[in-house]
Image 1 (tube, rainbow, N blue to C red):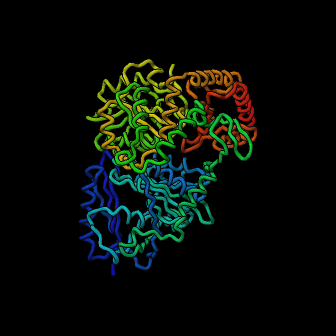
Image 2 (cartoon, helix red, strand yellow):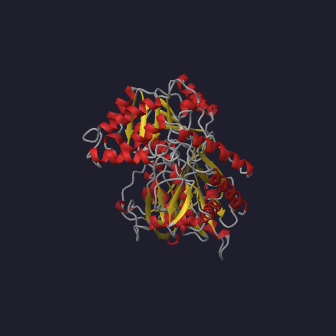
Image 3 (cartoon, one colour):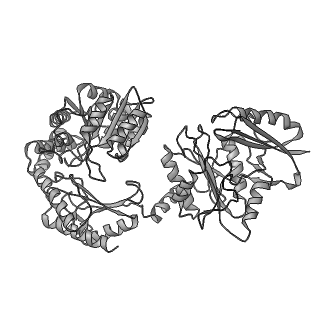
Length: 636
């Protein structure tokens, strides 16, 4: 049987390379496959081809290398940022510490017809023609076990064929690829060691970015042997029947879990629990030793307030310990109504609605009010619950630079919409800085957008009466949606939303995280109500907290530590994750509990100590904390 290599290349003078494909076929199949590849060349999502090349070459059957396809696994991710992180983990599995650099390089080769050949030990490109790159050719799948739609590109099958051949090339330890097709967002990392690992999202839909990198490590053979194999060796990849294509050949179902945990440990990102053996307070007991607690969000120290505990015991006797159902069935008690009325009064809005957590409030509000076709403008440092709410809504999320109102307005003008939202933290939980709310609201009103602030860390902290961000800026007009938590300054548990009656009635009927959750316990609601009454009627604790904030700023300045805050949160940037962990551990040895915050909570390379103050920290504790922080940061 006479065999032929059939190659198609399509290009456009403005776009450059559009499409390429090849098949290994016998003589009788040539007309059918040629017409099919020509159809693909002329109908591509990147544009119309103005030049198409068809090349036919005879192949000697004896020259063909037969390969079994790499085993396939699929990693499902919700967003391309998660996909990139999964790709980095896989590169790490291959022993490559420069994963960030490799990913960055991948984004620069979209215009190349071929692939980068990268020496992973020197991080130098070694392909002879760096404008063209290396092209793996003379390969195809076996056609005897499945049916093909010849006119459509089978991204998965063709990528699996190429990845299998590349993995068998001398000196190649792996490959990473993102398709340049704007409609195809799946990419992969492949190697003999890990198989062909599909990652469902490695870029945003509509993006023309894409490229591939062959990861090279020198052995006894030369780079010329690698290039010759990739560009000249004929290979048929046996991938079995179609049902096998999507089946993972896993010997260990826990492999991904183990790999992820190993990655976290080796990169100083692993988390573990610390068990506290006392009430949340300015001093806590842990491991049978007392520590100064400088990591808690209980800013007013209401978690352990004697009046609140007495009230909770009384309400527990009256209402019991559980609600027995969701808020719309059996889970609304008189205590729930009283708390919501008090919250509305506190925030000076028409009504309020309590959710089980702040996280559930954010995802419930955003995903019920906004949907596909809408646009959400979100600060780049917003809390994860806001980010997840945006994702669940399926609205287009446009991220603007942190607290940059000029960038926000530019993004609004670039993304006009019928229904949209600007959403921001009031106090940013890892940086402690405060949103420019007056300007945010001006833009929202000017462009007809909803405004929403997350007051988790400003309620009970900012303002002359602790009423939060609006009081801080002396604003008479409120944002359309005010969200907050009961679990920080109020020392209890839960989230809330305040706004007009229309908003609250809508959320009762549409917010899934409200509708389908068992109501918070009457005991929890009672503790929130008692705490809120204290905050509303006695400003003693608020004044102590604000005095401590001013005093700690002075302590940091005296120790020449570059950190300042108007809120109870002080970020002390260290940078390196391991250094932050080491400093935190040394502080713990000296009796000071200060958390090291690392990726993914904050950006890589911006690890920090997060100091959070309480109203009842003493001046001596704060000055000593600043002195020790300076000492241990200075010693690393």
